[in-house]
Image (cartoon, rainbow, N blue to C red; front, side, top):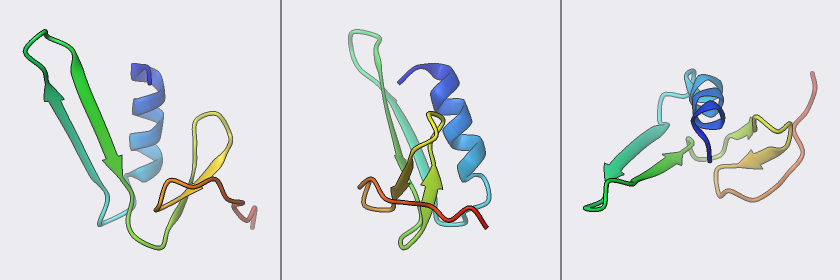
Length: 63
């Protein structure tokens, strides 16, 4: 994922109290990023899709 996508995802997740974001740097200088959203929640991705806390695609209500 590129930095803009990660930033947009983090902004979308900023209201979740149990959301975690970790980033690690490998020996070759590349980074590994991992975002875990709170259990039982759904988020809208930067691309307009919707995923649940198990990272499966789902539908989000528009209300």
